[in-house]
Length: 340
Ligand code: AHM
Ligand code: MG
Image (cartoon, rainbow, N blue to C red; front, side):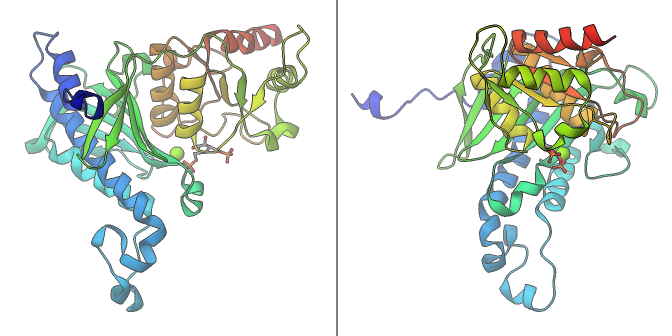
């Protein structure tokens, strides 16, 4: 059948979100417009990342070329370029009012003529240490709505993660995958480069209840706290008769979390003696990934509490994070509870 060779009824991300939004009678299409601008940013970064290895030869994003670089014109770094693309796409959507990017010290307040009711927190290109060797990297984002009344203020983005209206990431890997939740489950879309469209390939993702993989930077073991050290010891030398877990660690949060979501298991970035708050940033790393984990049936824990309950006081704040399969996170919660 022709239908076997070509799927003819394509669920694009725009169609999917329009369907979802139509369930909310108050929806005015603003979210769909915002998302289409995020999708544009992802496509741009995907194309730039794919060309990165050739950047010296052909110039990144057509901005500079060999001649220009010879004349001393610097290539823009991929993370800086990605940030510019996202900021411009988000502002021009006319649907945002506050942007927080890992690349910018200060939050961006959108000028009133272009202002909308969404706040977007994002890491435009996470895992930058992996760029130059072609390992998967990604964009992470979370979306809040401004509190009603009054001028937009920093408090509008200093809200607990559970108040997010949507969260997601785009992974630039062997394929370009966008995973998103608007609070009704998690769905994954893969970019079809020939169409330039994200097509629904992973409907209603649910994380396995228990996994066989743990993911952590073990190079820090010497400075871990007790519960983390105990947990990892148990992964390697289980005392309950179960098999040892496998270790997988890419060092790109998006790729490590994506694998955790699909295969199950646990991802840890704990506190250690050098970094009592861990490394990862609450607003645009910990919250979006925790939101997705819970929506997929998993859990996210800081070592003290449910991650999505944290109330950030600073836009670049960090927190330890343990997230993944429900049962695996349950174990680490028990170890931290025993410590108190
Ligand atoms: P970055 O924002 O400098 O790219 O750092 C964030 C990355 C995450 O993607 C990843 O989970 C973590 O740093 C890895 O850190 P480490 O190298 O300490 O294991
Ligand atoms: Mg980052």
